[in-house]
Image (tube, rainbow, N blue to C red; front, side, top):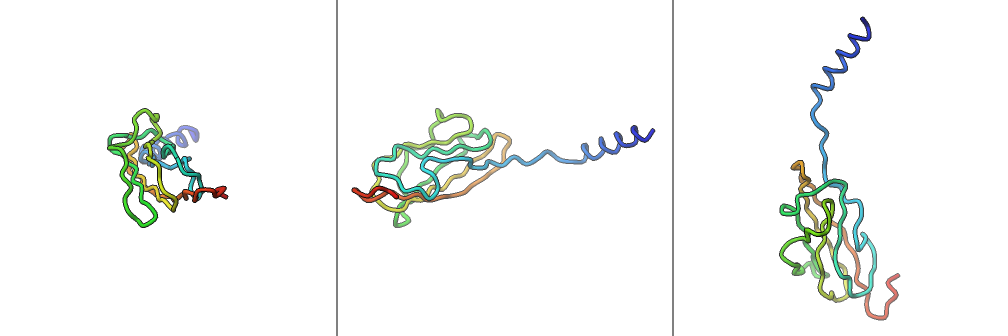
Length: 126
């Protein structure tokens, strides 16, 4: 009888609980946050903890003076179900900030930003 009451209570708690919110969390990036890299970074590549809606997600890049850096018209869909990637042109030295916004397949919006540095020529990037 006690087991039945306990199971009934557990069932009621589970029925009242809503689904867990699945927000897109950035797991890794290339370049990494805070990294100093040599000129010629081929792309920005982001990996998330969840599948994302590529058509509704985006990467924006700002340069050393806060100016928007032109990127191709949308993230690469070939990057994978949990990745966003955009190719880059040759960038001059300076501090760049990646601003990202993703919608997960279950409709949650997440966003964030991080910066990386392009080293001066001849610098070791340390």
